[in-house]
Length: 231
Image (cartoon, rainbow, N blue to C red):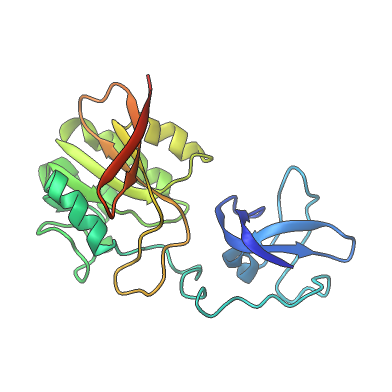
């Protein structure tokens, strides 16, 4: 096995994981989360094989570093926003609604929690300058679709999301934004000693968006780098 970052052949996400080798010599990359779950591997380049955790075909036992276990837990879909990162964004946008929060980590006076079913709320009735750090899971497309539906009625919606330009939801919804800022480095979840295990982007929606501007943001120094535009 080889520990490295790559595209998981099971879930299609880019993250930390391992290359696995079975008895027939086939190998594939599996992220730690999918390896823990076991299940089928699907890839256009690799025949479908089953490699559950206790598979005798796995030549070496995979040992997940203890420091990564809380980061890569399959239950971990929420990443509480880095305080320094939010402060930088709030100084620019002055948010009045946190659209995905809990009572413990809400960043604005007004906020929605999981119990209130954010996707069913009318955001622009409760805020005009909205911050969103959505749950990181397979429903991300629903969140981004909601953002696109609300943005014509809000002054600004700012989303902190995983940078996944390989996915359909990115092409369907992120390219409708006014600006996309790719973050330098990786931010740290509040109260944690580790960084989130994926690259991130700040995606900004305004009512008058006609094209998407791409920038690179060194958020710790608040420096922006060369931008390009897609019309």
